[in-house]
Each structure stands twice: as C-alpha cells, then as structure tokens.
Image (cartoon, one colour):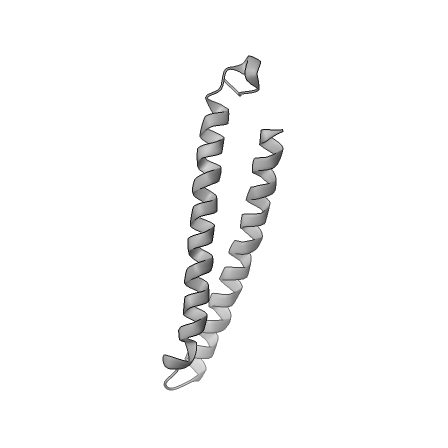
Length: 80
C-alpha cells in the first residue's frame, strides 16, 4: 500500500513539474518578446517560485518515505 501511495504522489508531483515547466517556458518566451518585462512578470515569478517550493517539499517527503520503506524488514512490508 505504501508503494502505491508513493507512486500516486510521484505522479502528482510530475504533473506539477510539467505545469511549472510550461509556465516557465511561456514566461521565457514572453520575456523575449518584450523590451522591459521585469515588473510585469513579478507575479509569474512568485507563482513559479511557490510551485517550486511545493515540489521540493513533496519530493523530499517522497524520498523520506521511500528510504523508510526500503529499509523496513521484509516481513513488515519493506523491500529488504
């Protein structure tokens, strides 16, 4: 069950990473098209920064869960 939960969380984080990547791509293209874009994209940068923090926390949690699962004895559901 824990493996399924970790896999589901990983899939969700991958979708968020794709969203963040898309957001940054669009923002980068918009910056290229404008002479002075800095002030207009501050909100987008904030949003991207918050998304990156959330992804980092989620990935840290998944790493910890995976580590714990891998180091549990086999009889308790671990992979060792």
